[in-house]
Image 1 (tube, rainbow, N blue to C red):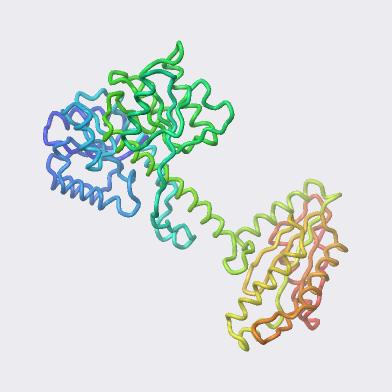
Image 2 (spheres, rainbow, N blue to C red):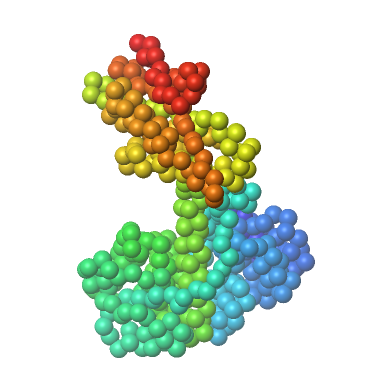
Length: 463
């Protein structure tokens, strides 16, 4: 996985050793010895990940990293701190200062590279859900401000032993009492086990092939719909370097020593919980943004961006079975709509558009396509509809609008529609969406030429 990595360390030997290890894994590595130099590099190149000796994480460097992360928050520039101090208290201090991971010297190469891959993967997943700022606002993807975050749901997957009970109490002291303690062998029997964070107790075996059981459980969590977006924290023995590296590569988000203190657990679990919440918000923002991108904001109908590909799919289905299937297409225009805007104002004009959209939609089948494709212009496409049914439906739509005035305060506005109708050709070659839309548009012009408030059928497509 390519990436730009910045190494900050005052000791030349440490810088050289880390650079060799990372460069051999094909990372683009920059090294700095002084905090001022590191600040300039961060601002100029925006590295994907920072690895810093504990003594090199000065306030100036930390503030620069926070500034560079901006409103996007954590994991836009993850930080690995490397320390010679051993013990959970030393790790907690660095985690509290903003590090995403703390590794103790000497660092096993396999563990270092696995953790780098894990953090870069998480960063990439976050970046994929964050469009460019200008695009975000244009498409309605702007992130919502952070609000109150409920306590995360934590499930401890552990064998029923005294050690797992101790770990549960330890989690409680860290402020994350598990919602459930579940034997991993029975974790997914009913498919209802959901959590924000899964804590896997891997310090003791629960099967004969303990490594395979741990790895299989992580893979299972990542593959299931109910747990694939949750965070996974593995509790492992301090010496289990191979398990740690494989766990990261299989999808674990963090690995902690079995002797970690309450403060370290609190910081790691809190970070994971915030990460899960942030990613969930990004996915929801992306989903709602995509919805907004294909809908008309005023009427709630689909827009042209959605309608044309959908019409193409409908027509393709007729090409596969032309002897039994046709598509009826209508282009509908509100007559004299400019007069309504000029006389009553654009606010009333908007209300008329919303009311017309609602009436048209109420007269159509759920499978039919209706979209607003212009200012006062609508597109309707009816699957499995021949000429007579298309004309009958168009006439019904025209009458529904004409027969009911629209009330706007004390005013009652009479609205009529002109409708052009085209029906797909009964040939295997068929025609594309643009061609049938042009035919319907010409038919609409004919309806207006005949005095408006009319339905007009286009001439058949050329064979």
